[in-house]
Amino acid sequence: QKEVEQDPGPLSVPEGAIVSLNCTYSNSAFQYFMWYRQYSRKGPELLMYTYSSGNKEDGRFTAQVDKSSKYISLFIRDSQPSDSATYLCAIHTGGGNKLTFGTGTQLKVEL
Amino acid sequence: SAVISQKPSRDICQRGTSLTIQCQVDSQVTMMFWYRQQPGQSLTLIATANQGSEATYESGFVIDKFPISRPNLTFSTLTVSNMSPEDSSIYLCSVNGLAGGHTYEQYFGPGTRLTVT
Image 1 (cartoon, each protein chain N blue to C red):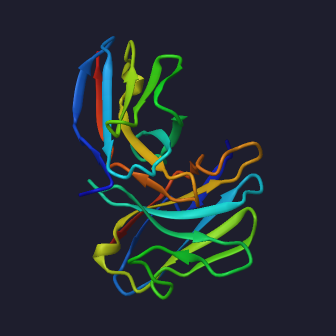
Image 2: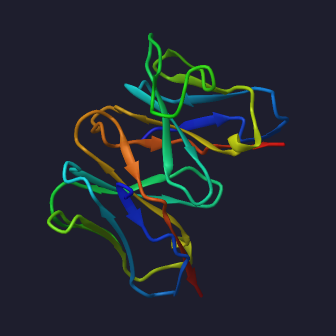
Image 3: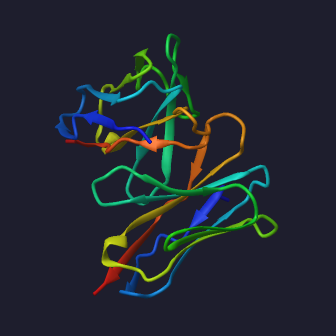
């Protein structure tokens, strides 16, 4: 079993839709949860990170963590064509420097 | 965040040759890392580049294949040695330890797209 599982998509939605991106993880020692956005032929860009269970909001983006279910989500409201990218979840144990990544979900927001 | 640049941005190399990838950061950072990103797979950590000492390699990666240098707090190189087509991938440099940042906040360079023929 992979430490972090993420549906690769592709996911195609119309402009203005609410997008839900999800990851599950197996190691209960994971404490910090990150979402990265990667445009084609670019490096990953850190979007948000959160520590505790619950929601964290930043503009149109909301990160949600449910530690009891080992489930993390990223919601994008009012999605735009510029949100078309691959979204990667990444998880950190809190000690050391290693991040464990999901495979990424490819999102396309269509006009 | 920091401005991270990588050279070259892409290259096509013949099997058996070596390529050195450079990573430059616009500010001093504590840690620098090298990742590999293959199609359909997770980003995989190759090694942590330690300033002033040998790099720390992850399981499955060895120094002879991926020698790393880190001469100062803003620069690192990764060499992919004796390349085979299986080394075709995107290689990414990342950093953490920016001023005011947490160790789990890693920022990535634009990547080097390597094709081995």
